[in-house]
Image (cartoon, rainbow, N blue to C red):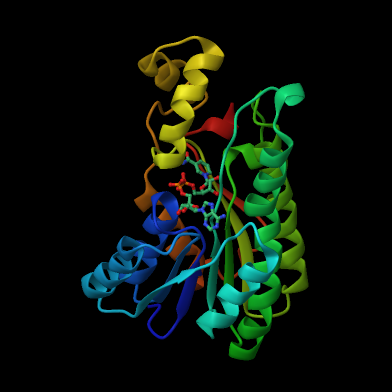
Length: 256
Ligand code: NAD
């Protein structure tokens, strides 16, 4: 049902972004994949996705830590019916030791990039008379964990930005919502395991069971397909009056 629509997914050469891109392509949308690299495998990924689903898929390199590149990504796509702000990084450290440059890049990539892409995309959505902005926030957009100050601040920030975007588009056929995943086993989560092992002095299995899934009552990781299908739902007519809110896909984390 998304035939003829173009979806831009930031940070989509792996993990949740790629999972969302895949489910949107399955639903018929043309896709713009993005990350900050420009490797042959990035373009190969686009070609594979296109062949898999019979849609047009392009890979556009743009660094989401840079405002001008965020805006250029949207301009280069030329059309943006669905914008998924997904690019994100993590760093784990106590506040006094938190590297300043890590704080700055987490705020830039996880929060400020969405301001730039949304600013560039809304005029295109208005011209087309329809649009969907989907921000990939986190359970950490609604709750907090120690040692994740920049990430939690950025994710709470994007939940706020989601509400403002919804209010500014409320009278148009445009919605803006945030998906709040719990733990999904992706490269980003994989990369946190060694830090958490040090921080908590635990083995890999103990970190997964006692730290990560300790807060996830289902005791199961959520999947990238589930994030993608939630995004597809938000693009459907059933979701036309859902705007300015969060959808948790977190195995009960935020119910605790
Ligand atoms: P991931 O590391 O697999 O993917 C992150 C993506 O962002 C990659 O494609 C990476 O290339 C891209 N990226 C990083 N820096 C970038 C930059 N400067 N410019 C452009 N692209 C950049 O991680 P993921 O788990 O798939 O995370 C995706 C999003 O989901 C993030 O916003 C993350 O905070 C959020 N999230 C993940 C989980 C989880 O458990 N995995 C939970 C909640 C929220």
